[in-house]
Structures are given as C-alpha cells and as structure tokens.
Length: 208
Image (cartoon, rainbow, N blue to C red; front, top):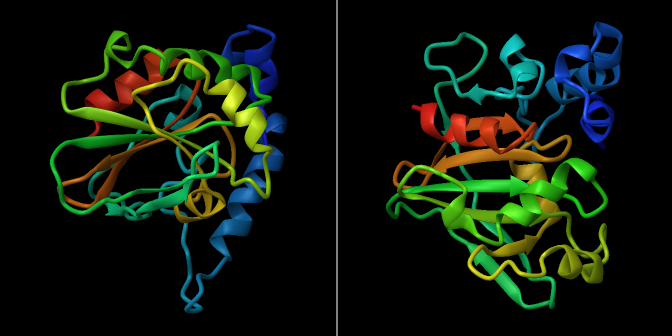
C-alpha cells in the first residue's frame, strides 16, 4: 500500500494539497486495524496509527504522553529477517543503549529514493547523537531480493533487513514510514510518515 499523499510527493507538490476525500482509503485501513486481533485473540488497537490525529498530515508523529487513545509508548519487537543476500539477520531490542530508527521502505517508491540515498552516508543526515538506523523492507516472499540489493547499493553501515513480520509487528500500513525505538526502555517513542528527511529528523529530536 502506498499512502494516498504519495502521488503528490512524486509530482513534487506540497502536502497541503491533500483533500479529505483522498484520505478515505487509508482511513478505511485504519478502521480495519481497529477491529483486528492478535494471535491470542486480543484487540490490536490503533497504537497511534496514521490519521489518528491531524499531526499525521504534518509528517511529525511523536507518541503523545497521556492521550486517552494512544499510550505514552508501546513495547518494541525484535526485527528478524534476512539480508538481501539471504543471510539471517536479527536486530534485538534488548535493553541496550541509545535509540534505533526503523525505516520501512520499498524499492519502487519515488518517495523512498531520498531515504535509500541518505543511508549511504548516515553521518551527514543530522540525526541526534545516539540514534542508529536500520532499513526494513518486505520479506523475500513479497519483494525480490535482487531489487532490494540494487536499492541498497552503497549502504554499508546501516543494516538492511527483509522481514514481513516486522511490518506486522510495527503496524506499518504504507511506506516510507519511520519508527523510533528507545532501546534501553524497549519502547516505541515516535513515528512519522516519510515526507522528507526534515520530518524524520524532527521526530527523532522531539520524541520523548
């Protein structure tokens, strides 16, 4: 699924051109998630999913504290999958130090190109100190590994993980999408749609 605003980004138009009618398909997806249950039959809940509040359209989505609909933070999950070359890879959220930026990207998305390119030189991005990154695509059963390998050319210091399960665990409905995890607390503390690096960096700097 590509966010409805993606077409505007691909045409290099401003996001304030989005009308309410454009949001209906995405809103329907969010309502479906509201009714979903996990493997234990427990409600999944929205957990701050897109369109839960107007800030989503601004690109900035720190997890708000004290919201009746959105918990201050929710537990993160390990990222388990394979590299584009087929090697098993696991990113453990095990109480270490710092924060981890999860970048959910696709290979045929014009809006993702600047993020693929940016991860070739992560030091130049301007992310806050202590924030490391990992790129997550759909798994090899959903996306050809060769396409991911091509997109990842030049990315040497940021892991690239192919994992369908990670998209499920983090309730990702579209791309590009970013999730910020506090590794020490084992919690998600921020989310943002990838409208551009400025939005992503702002989220990492303002998340509690």
